[in-house]
Image 1 (cartoon, each protein chain N blue to C red):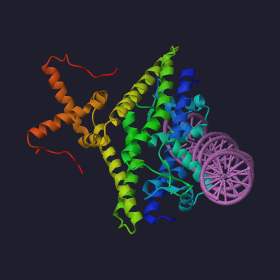
Image 2: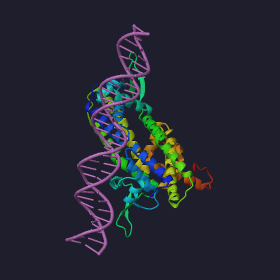
Image 3: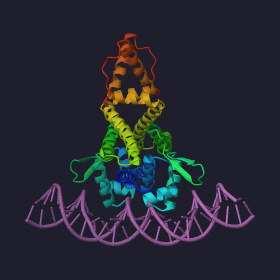
Image 4: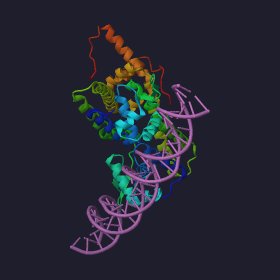
Length: 191
Length: 191
DNA sequence: AAGATATTTCAACAATTACTGAAAATTCAG
DNA sequence: CTGAATTTTCAGTAATTGTTGAAATATCTT
């Protein structure tokens, strides 16, 4: 399997990007290749197309599986394992976000919470805790919001995004309504 | 300058996280230290606190400056350069997002656009272009939306986030209104 | 169960990235 | 302009991370 120049450019760029994001080049290239492939590929095909050793591909696929970014399947009458990337790009985006949350955000939040429990001994610690609290709240708010919004179906999500900053009109309307009824209405604040 | 255990834990965690994100450990630790510091620090103080060489700190600060994540200032009667992290965590978040966009997203979008201009020769290329178009559109939509929303002031942004998935109510209202007036209203779709 | 085919593991090696000390460059006070 | 204080550069080295082939393991077929 040889890659056309178009595909090759994409694969190389993606590999390069991957390495800037803490994902190694091989893994990035494998994923890019699967992403554009017309049909599922087996490890030997990938090794040949990308010029990596079979064992390197094996490790890369293991990594991608752990991120739930590739699907494993079998083709009738073929013993080899075939891999593919999910069709729906929004689903891919979701998976990526979920995994990153689980691996990076959650441990960070937990570390921050622990640090906030300690009794500050010095002025420096008191100040540091204030800063950690700000960071904690920002991360928590952002990720809670994100997981909330991600539950929307792709169509609604896209509508919302196309709206851009205009969503604020909703806030204005809400404020006006609340003002009109004496602001005793429900408040959705979580904190 | 020695760090209290609380601060040390945070600094080490942040350094570790940094290395998962393609930022090196030193840079992550420097930033963490500045983030919690009560007052601006000079390079020697950081070198001592973190146990890195003076030259390593110098390189790290250069990197952080290029990301616009630290401010350089001078203290009266002191020739040395002092550094600090911005106060406002939302501003930090914005800066980070802008820089990442400039360095990673924009080049990727440009590569995708180029690839989409080529005339597909084979069926494989035709399919690949379809996929690249999906990726392009997702990235473009997401980043346009993001930069739009980031223009909002911190207060509005937080209100919006606390709303979470409930923003969709806005869409429902909008749909109802449009329905009522025969759907000839303005459409904000960009594409 | 044997043999063929396919996949994974892992120790050795390669490549990349991080870090340092010494030297060079810059900045500032007198 | 001189020289002391400070910062930056950079070549060499250390540490980390990536890659491979060979061996081990697993899976299927007959």
